[in-house]
Image (cartoon, rainbow, N blue to C red; front, side):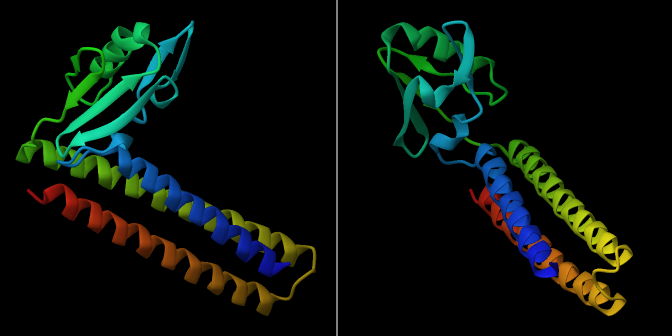
Length: 184
């Protein structure tokens, strides 16, 4: 019973780390990467769809993304969606769309660091919430007399170790992302 709770908490914390990586992918560094445009939604026949469902997104060179729409009629809609996104990008439109990434200034790098720290803090909060939920489940087992007080204490210590491991992993990934952002 307790082992199932531990495994479940580890799986949920791992999903939080995966979500953190997706959040970090949206924080742009100085290099072009297709995941920068993952959050862009394009109007397509009356509904908003992710950009990658209406176009191929690739890297032309280290500072330029190339977006090739599946339909020629989508070029202007994709261009408008990229301009209106909060990424601060100005695409160049022809048959395909070129998205040059401006060089990051010191101020922009600091802003991106703040965004990355916010993502990391949200991940830590999620991990702590998972810990709280699991400890609550363990206390419920104790109340129902399915486990002893010693089992509860040991399980609590194990859950705390798991939590500490994942919080340390979040800190490690944040440090790597900050170093990547500050590299010129």
